[in-house]
Image 1 (cartoon, rainbow, N blue to C red):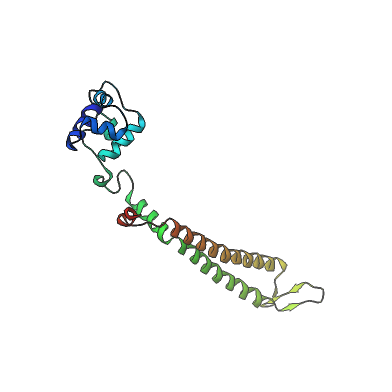
Image 2 (image 1 turned 135 degrees about the vertical axis):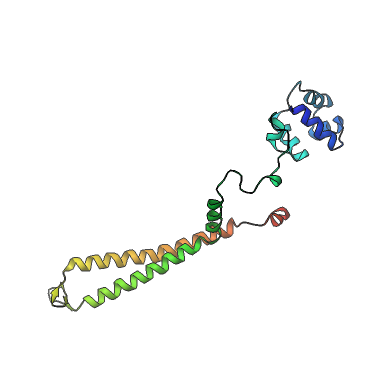
Length: 187
């Protein structure tokens, strides 16, 4: 079916005359007649208006191979996409901010463990300012303290970063929350 045939069929189904359609689009009746006879094509803005007016897709109007109107309502929900990826994406959009809370909790747990280890290894601060550590009769040098301090700082950064991530994602979730179709139509 050509654009003209589809347009004529849609117009007759809606019980609209060529003159009335021309008035709605702001064109002459002769222009509508030329479109239906496939003598000329409507401009892009008129194709958009026609698609909205008759509630059809642009593909249906412009593609001669498509003979059946396919609207978003009668398309399958996950056309051409992986349903598992869609479900994971939807879950992360709704509950992704919990990842920040989990990161903070794990980092706090690690921070507590590194701090306890650090404090248990520290036995004596020598007069020269160096830390002397006795652990089972074996000396542990400054390198161990440097590593523990680095892990403590990284864990503390994980706590702060996780809380920031949770706050950011929660704000984004509220801003772009998924609303049911009925609620979106009311807006």
